[in-house]
Amino acid sequence: MTTPPHDPYGQQGGYQQQPGGQFQPGHPQQGHPQQGHPQQGYPQQPGYPPQAPPLSPGELNRPARPKSVDTAFLLWMIGAGVGIVSTIFSFLTAEALAKATAEKILGRDVDSQLVASAEPSYGSAIFSLVLFALWIVVVFQMRNGANWARIVLTVLGALGILGGLFGLFAIGLLFSIGFLGAIQALLSVVQLVITIGALVFMFKSDANYYFKAS
Image (cartoon, rainbow, N blue to C red; front, side, top):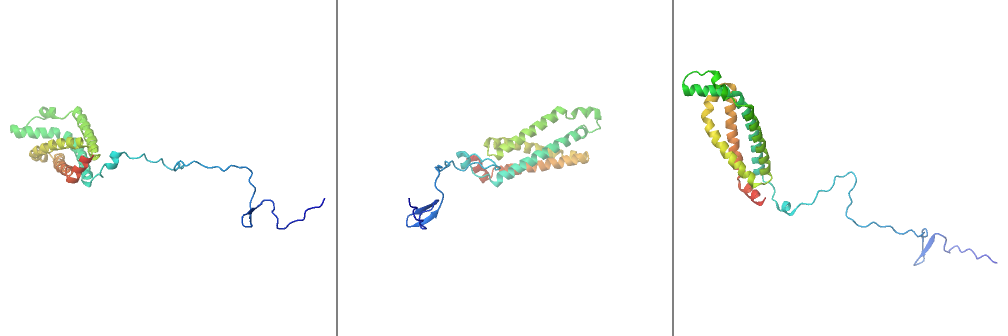
């Protein structure tokens, strides 16, 4: 047998001849199937927060909250804080205010024991705190566009304005009982102004459109 001559230009192992006479190095295929990944969108990467759920059609069509509603919300919250502080001062000045009122009506000195029953009880204090808590809940609902909450705040605001106007007649008595009474009188005036401002901003034209669309 004769050994075939070595062809320096022959095809070597591991080289595949490409069309056109070009040689390209490579490894022979060993039967490994090509692996592919099905397209499933963008997978969740570790270390990243979950994607937000899609918005509903109602949320997409809801207009942006106007500045007037945010201002009304802020005024209502400030008014609630002022009201809580004013309620605390009213407990501190209740006896002195009742005595000053009785002396002005009767025209003579009144025994302090007779007016001690005019002091508010702990039950009324708890009731006042519950009312303020409900008030804050309604204010947040108004901020979210609930028209019923705006109506409730309108009724409460109107009653508060009437009470504040009648309370102006007692400002003189509050100032007459000392420093705490003067602070309570000033808080009453501030709360009255805040309530009027909140009602005005709550019924501006952009606010009306916001509540109507919500």
